[in-house]
Amino acid sequence: MQICELLPLLAKQGDKYSLLRSVAHGNFGHETAAYLTQTGHEPGGTLVYPTIGAVVGLFKGYDHGYKGLVPPYVVITQPQGRFSECGFLGPIYKPFATGGNPAAKRFEVEGISSQGITDERQVDRRALMHNLDALGKADPSDPSFAAYDSAEEKAYDFVRDAAKIFDLAEEKQDLRTSYGQNTFGQSCLAARRLVERGVPYITINHGGWDTHKRHFEAMRQKLPELDKGLSTLLTDLSDRGLLDSTIIWCCGEFGRTPRIDWAPPWDGGRGHYGNCFSVLVAGGGFQGGHVVGTSDAKGEFPATRPVHVQDLIGSIYELLGIDPDGALPNPRGLDLKVMPSEENGPGKGRLHEIM
Image (cartoon, rainbow, N blue to C red; front, side, top):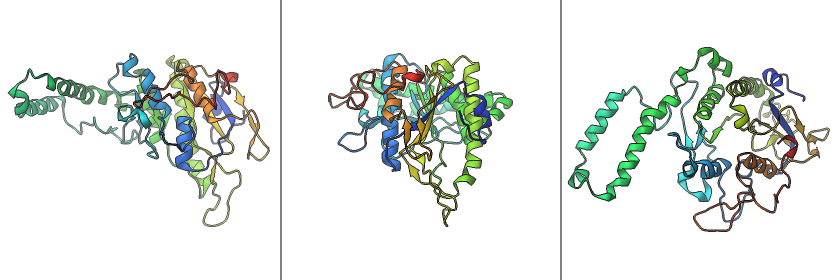
């Protein structure tokens, strides 16, 4: 492996991950490339397919044994917002977006932040609400209120208990420092806490990589943050015996142009590039210490073993125990598969070299 000098900690962890050096989809647009990279389906057509997180929520969520307070698909901190992550599965499969900043003194998670309100005050507020509930008092045995009461109970359990899951102050300061005292590093720590509690799918949306201007200046900030956060996450999960059961994949929706634009106002900028880029995968059945594929001498196109996004996502589904060629339930009753069959027949294109 050849690792950039700005990633010395990840270089030491090379036995834990593998690098896909020949990923290509040929798409250069943020919206369309993000859709393709997160769903495995080509953009266009009349259907909006769900992201891999929503599909995992469907097959590994509440209907399949998951009992956690936190929803089965979590995004730290904000979704990309370029398309509907749940697609045609509907809003019940949307990710729970934490909002807030994990690196702040207090990680204020949207929807469950107490904002200084004690448990006792929460109880008093709820009692006051019930005292004002004249409609419910009129006929408390009315079965039409059962669903409302159940939803209320779950909501209060979530507000009361889920906030503790995101309380990073429970972690030792040395470990928090190892992750990096920045939004990405502390997001990785929050993700590890969610993994410990069995949350099936977690996305960390780490922005700032769209380097049309002054690419190399930006990388001297972004890469050390990535280095500390991701390398510590790999070590932390491994030390806790969780890496073998947790898949990590790290990528953007595309890469950056091999050609650098030094003219003003770009001053060393790099544009969108979907013809050849790299992806890191680790854990959950992926072998570490391997490089899959190569690019040509200029990094413009795959030279050996082209990897399509469908290959990657299909492999992840297989390792998660989800059949990529199986039926994808949908509210319209359409005959759909988890992955497009024309791209991935049984065994075709999977990353068997590292599975």
